Length: 530
Image (cartoon, rainbow, N blue to C red; front, side):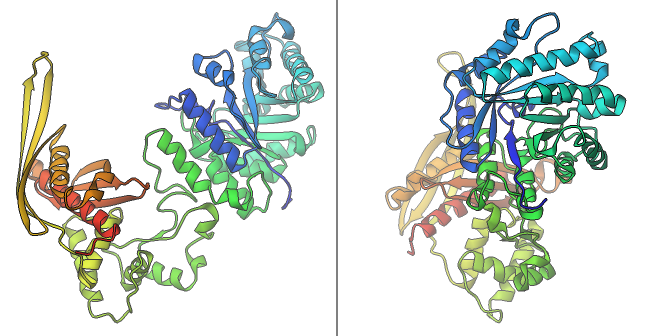
């Protein structure tokens, strides 16, 4: 079994687009297809020609793929029509894609109730459609919809449907757990029976994740003999999503020893591809995602870190570099010296375990986290704290005072607007000054005023922009007087991203503290040492 080839089929652009809140445009679909092709996916399902304007526009400008085969999705002919005279089938066959994936009913309940056809007619609809597609395209894939429910209800009916597709010329017969209700032991048992009718090297699996077993079901099917696996990036899909290819691929390759179209170098791009999709969707990546999440190889407890330092296999099931991720030593109120030393090495600070200032730094970290700081997420703030404690970081500017005003009014066009204005008194390189700036909120105005004051002395601050701003109430029992924590994410021209935090009972003050760290970190990284 190990060493055999598994073919990967991605349906992010079609099945994944059914995710609530996801709406791919044509540029999104083209960009994602190129990433999948570069990764080494064998088949990329582009969409359903004729179903909507977006998919039609996508197939009108097919991406140039180097390795993957683009597929068009559709359904078998309707009852009462010939395959040659079915408009839906015609749209799929004329899409420009050289592979078609046709879905057909494999549950007698659906054939009788939804389609109102006999078992014989249902099989004829499948066979006629696959046979016609096989004469016009390079490959035909048959998606056996609700196969596992159908098999449980009437094995003869379900097996008859896929046998008809195989005989008509389908390259792959894909067994679909369409409602995601089948469990791994059932999958393995049923697939074990199916391979007696359809060879494993002609079988595929497509699982949904409604019982949180989409990945487990897919791997169980491979164990039972299938050699074609369908899924989506990050498990996108309607309801609870599809089987997550981002988890399936490394499990197949690193755990089970199978070969895929993704080589070792491609596997190192897995984390990038996962995060790339989230970026296109304008959402934060799941930090706890298996293999690729920021926390997937994060270590927080002191004893764990000590063990990882001696032998990474103690708490890491793979080398994170294999999937393009990295080990992350978290500094927190649970940290021991092992955490702290490892994290310092991670940011380029080499300190001996008996350094006289190390204990004070650890105590300071724990005290600040008790007050509400979160150095798990604010790596830049931690680095500045550490460098100030162990060495020094210049005070690039000294703020004497700031004032922020908000105004809500009707403008000259009769539109209700809200503007913020920030005034700061500041000393930069010993030169006092005062700046005033407006913004679409108090933090934006304060940021603008700070930059205006710093630009003459530090032009590099023009390169940065705030990309995320989060506020968390730490003491909700104190109502409007609660302690708040502000997290700010910043990026610059070269794409470097860093996070800082501030804590105060005043949200603007907390925001200033995070902004101060963000600007200071940029100047330190730029090589400013005075």
